[in-house]
Length: 189
Image 1 (tube, helix red, strand yellow):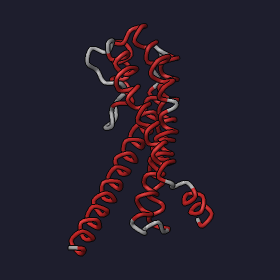
Image 2 (cartoon, rainbow, N blue to C red):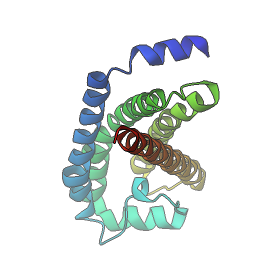
Image 3 (cartoon, rainbow, N blue to C red):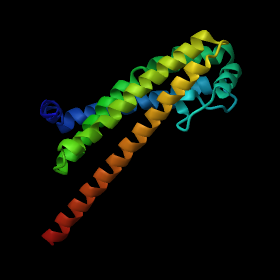
Image 4 (cartoon, rainbow, N blue to C red):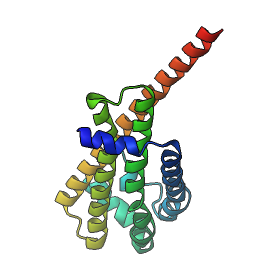
């Protein structure tokens, strides 16, 4: 754990954290405003599998892929998924660094709190596994395997849970930093 702590502390310079955060959000905006809408045009309002944080069933996956049709499935596989193969890495690294940065500012970069910095990495790994499941489902359509859907759904749930926890920790860290800053201002008056 000491070795990991040293590696992490070497990489928490504000510029490096900011750069990763910026790149992550550029890719996210690309997905949000370009690649996801390209697929959603064909979905008749059905959400894509990787946009369902509460999970989905085999029936839902089959219905979505049927509704997407050949053009929608192609857009999902060749437009959305390639960009979504970049995003999990950027999310995992940038939000890990952001959490480390803020925890360091709070002087809480110690073992129990350092583990919280793994949440975005877990979310990123789960996102990759989810993507591999979706690729498998799209490539094997119309044969939708219940086992693959179940596994992919599990990774979707892990991704959304780890992401939610990451943002909760981030929000708590920002709140504590804000309280600390207000106390400093109050004490200096």
